[in-house]
Image (cartoon, rainbow, N blue to C red; front, top):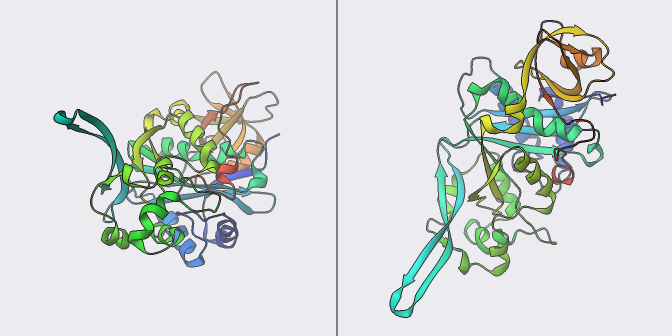
Length: 362
């Protein structure tokens, strides 16, 4: 009834499959570069992040993969950074409206101004959302995009109360970012892809040394660059709808490279976090008429899948044998679950082209 896929933490043995996925990403992804050594470091960072001794939000990078259990292939990724910033700050441009008045000439106007913002103790960030196009079906987008919120709900002490998501900015038909072409390339003297790669692997010293330090008046940029500030790439529009549906809101901040929008939410207010429930498994049996749910094992060996649950009168759960096998659960296991939609009603929680060969999140 439900597809045989699981979402789980990345493992060392996933490197070849992860590299194939990263190489297939059109235009690349900041947090998932295709170079083998960079991916090895990503895997190491993620494995270190799941250490049971961690009790607070730090610079931990959690990377989850969506595995097709029929062949063991990695077909998607989803990540969480426990806290952005730190020794190397998190950079954004904050777009402010400023008023200019000169009474003798009867001039009273507002202009948008981009101010560089550095955050050394930032919020948590959801990132690295990517799904192969041929797997955009059967609720797999829901499994991939929402499971990380169940992990955050299961281990809230590991994350900040504030959560952000950076979406990919607009590019033209030639694949160029008008914002980068108008601004960034004049200061960094490299291509957008090169700068994005260095930032993605944590080498941000060049940003500190080269980024313009003074406010940038939007009106002084070319019209095509002005038009894309805060605008998402067309492939990221579905991801934007997903996040807005989950309670994220557009902020006044944009990415320093492509001016893609930054969204914010309070972790307890995220719909998947707020509506998730935790219960103990009491029975494993057939559940032919149960509604589809997103289900995860509350463990640092986190595993999530699509399946059915039945809430018993005593507050415990019944699950199917297939779900138990996918989650490595048994009677007494603690699960967190989220009803995805009621019969005849579907929310916008799929990950279409936004997270296929074109990623939606940085």
